Length: 463
Image 1: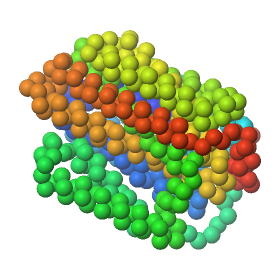
Image 2 (image 1 turned 180 degrees about the vertical axis):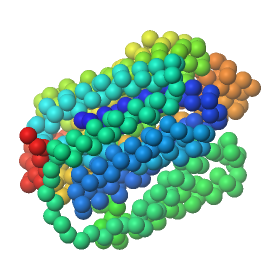
Image 3 (image 1 turned 180 degrees about the horizontal axis):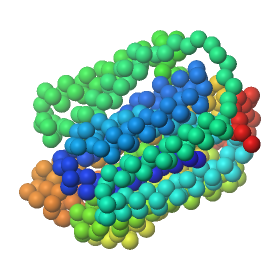
């Protein structure tokens, strides 16, 4: 719960402070990279951490993640320019890439599927608290102190989490030799980096119809294709592509991509939309984001009862429908910015995501034994962070294209409303695709999986 809190607070605290960061460091057109480079570093490192967890155990990996997150937070607090802050956010992302999936893997190691229906409420409470504390701290620091404190506040949290994990979490690992898939990791990193670079900079740093666009997307696509071939032949692939032969794993992975894209589209643009369109203070803009991240854990805390009674697919489909309804409502109110209306709609979207994210993860995680749980959990976390990285790149490209095509740019409230409306249309389309993936999930009831993930637990929490 403590380690999860690091990621949960970071998910909302920065978005509220973006206008303050841009005001001091400049480079408004580069601010999407504050999110995308973090998510890129997180997404490409997750498969590697998942493999390492099967070699040296979950505990060393999550402790390394907490340490990297601590170092990145300190450096971000002292950043002197936007490029420096972006670079240090990448270090934070490398830390988050270990913390996020390992936290959920450890929960899967320690608790059975039935127990996780109850434990999910505890994990959800972390997001509930962070959804209020994160935006509130971001708004307070930006308005009354300095945005740099949104990073310094992570220092005590990292130290406490590391201490508690070291003292209370114990595991037994069978030691054997492993072969790290270095080639696969490099190709995956190269491919995703180039694709996202093309989405962010296309139409801004160079025209869409240019050799630069063709080169970036071309090399990125070739790298990803080469990655797929390498993984099929690797002794121990960094991402086992045979997992996609299982319908449950494939559909929950696609759902994870959709969840990540919807979440980042809302949290990245609601504060900027409200602050630059109608001039609300950062604290009020942060409240709107908090409504989304409050609705999520409230729904997740009840998701266990839902999937135990009605099944995973039904729960996820209902959540996806709620998310889509909220996304369409956000598009409808975009021309009429009101912080409280936006907050209410954000709460609805968050509530829907709460019934989508947790049950889909637990369904995939619980369909395999201990030996595959780290990889499957890592794949779900990878898909969500990759979806967020691609989402913020696509939404950033849409917004930047509208800003560059208008004389007033981001300083014209009408242009900001138009750009935000276009982004919200993209979010609604993503929500619709997520609903389609939810319908494609196989019908698997929780009682059919109660024994699948309970084999030979190798981890325990000190009493």
